[in-house]
Length: 230
Image (cartoon, rainbow, N blue to C red; front, side, top):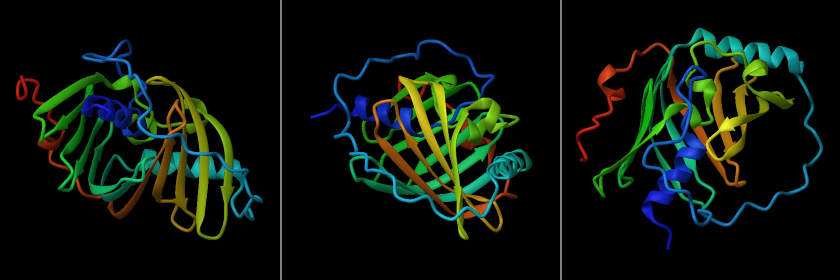
């Protein structure tokens, strides 16, 4: 059976965002995983490309505009992990650098980024692992100024009447290269979903609902208590 620590490491590699200006280097309290968290997802041959309704360059420009115009976000999220587990909760973002995934019970995890570090807390086990924020994949959530084409490698852009999907590759993440598929609403170009494929090939899907781009989160949500679990 996999340790809780290994599960937290896999979650970190799959979920948490990082600003480009963050500190890089080896993570604190980090033990390399000895086995994958679950069986790798079998890749299927891609089907025919959907009808394109948005020019790829325009799509990237609109995605940048969405992120750069919205410094805060509060939203409900549902997460589907590679092993089939479904969890949910509330996502809080304040760019640059601050984020909180607050999982609804019975889940016992919290992920908090305070602008410098990322902490994964397990309330049940009373543990807290702290990592350098620069090693995590989702720069689009936390970077101060976002330019998708500059910050990552754009691999594909597809769209239809309902959604625009931008697939990017980020080589500067924990454990190697990650791929992130960002999905926007075609009409409003609001972010509604993303999928992270980590360096081992495991996928984590996060879908957003009830997105509030005007609410400013309480700053206490982004505080990491480094003493609490000592």
